Image 1 (cartoon, rainbow, N blue to C red):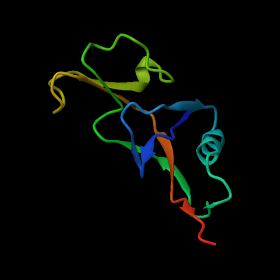
Image 2 (cartoon, rainbow, N blue to C red):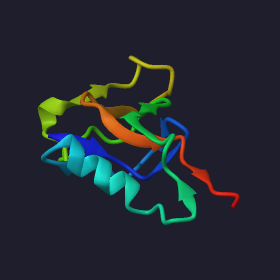
Image 3 (spheres, rainbow, N blue to C red):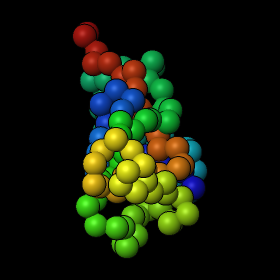
Image 4 (cartoon, helix red, strand yellow):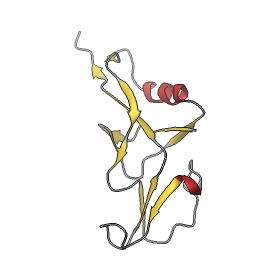
Length: 108
C-alpha cells in the first residue's frame, strides 16, 4: 500500500493531514499531480516521502479508534512522557507518506 497527502508545506506534512491510500506508487503520484494545471511547470516536480513535525495526530485520550487509512500495526503511538509534548498521545504512521515538491508556476 502507498500513501499520499495534499496537506503539506514543502516536505513537511501538516498535523491532522488527510492521508489517502493507493495500490501503487503510480496511483499515488497521479493523485499528487492532479491539482496542477497547465499553468504549472512539472518538469522539476518530484514525488518523495514527506516528513512529520512532531506527529500526525495528537489526542488527549488514549487512542481507541482506528486511524484510517492505516491499520493499528502501521502506527507509532507515543504515550505521554515518551515525547516532549506533555499529556497527549502522539500518533504517526510508520509507512512513508508521499508528497510532491518542486512544481513551479510558469512565467510565460
